Amino acid sequence: MTLQASCVVNGALYQPCSSAPSPPGQALQGFNPSGSTVGGFLPGAPIPGQTIGPWQRPGAGQFGNVGRNLLRGPAFFQSDLAVAKNFSLTERVALQFRADAFNVFNKLNLGLPNTAVDSPTGGEITSTGIGAIPRLMQFSLRVSF
Image (cartoon, rainbow, N blue to C red; front, side):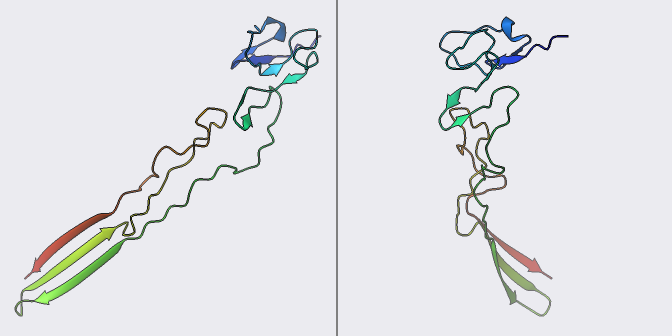
């Protein structure tokens, strides 16, 4: 029984590798399907994926060398404040004034970075965090009797 290597070319799986097209000018990801050295890669040798910026996908059958938890999002910080004052109008009637402020310091809480690191927008943060709000204030008046 002969083992035939499979390879990935531009995201499509080909088995055996000899059936994979090799488009000119595009990087292959997988194994060298030809019987000769191509681009410095020996026959059957892994061909790394396309490089975009500092990132590169590993070839088929390879593990990457990036450490765990490499991409971390920024910290989430939000302070809320509530102030209330009670006034007695009569023995049976009371008035309460209350002021609430959410995200008092108006801190911008950013979202998580894009985890597709081999894309042009890899590692970029393009949104705010879940539950992040700008400064919000509300006032209330309550009459108890």
